[in-house]
Length: 331
Picture 1 (cartoon, rainbow, N blue to C red):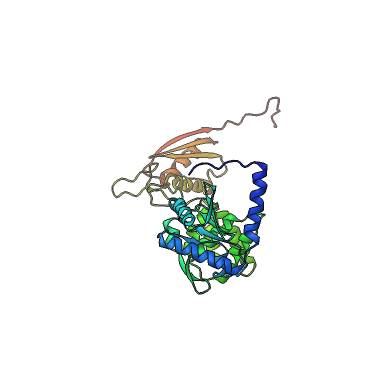
Picture 2 (cartoon, rainbow, N blue to C red; picture 1 turned 30 degrees about the horizontal axis):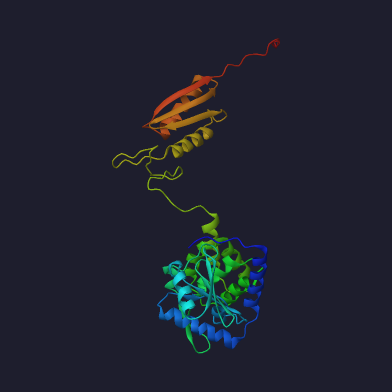
């Protein structure tokens, strides 16, 4: 499609003045005439399209004055659309080869848009949801309310606040396909979350579940569970760490460790000692200190009762109580 040429200062001033004229000095009869001529040419050429600007929003819930015509087409049809309008005596301009062409008839601007903010294109999903709307007794293609809301939310900027309010107006009207709106929200998820919360704060009937699902999509990790995941606190699950052989059920090691530590703390013979327990495949290792051999053997008994099929490696040391240096024996 080529590259956008940088404008000189004089060209930029001239273009800004023309843009102001195109968006502010339009009368309805002339606009309707240009709109119908545009639609006739596009439909005759069998170009897929949808209205996405003020004309579309008028029938969706926010009647407002519009001064231009916004046509959304697939990128592959942008050049053809411009050419057929030129053949109908429209003046044309390839304003930005990345997303926008322009055409004029009777000083009415037609914006030919082939990419919206958020990298939204006129794809098959949008095309399948296009609606036929009645505009002054003439039926034309318009973007679905759900796609309109997403496009407007993505396009909103400080200098064009009407986009935000257009989206809210359509949201207010309701009767939306909320599942489809959620799918399309992927192109501007944070804008859409902000819009839906703002709308709900203004008593617009946005379902809580829609906001919650969009929030989870953005801020919670995906709920992907691998086939061989290890659940350390769940009984009767095999894993790489605690494998299951044939029909044998082996508890996860951390669960066995927990049972042993709990039993040791409840046993009056050894409860006051700092004993570390390590469990690996078929082995229980005990480390730490006890005061005597009886306490060391008591640890073995506790482990044997909890894990009878495990090998016990008792590496407990006997603590030696030595009188402080220089102390005097009391007689």
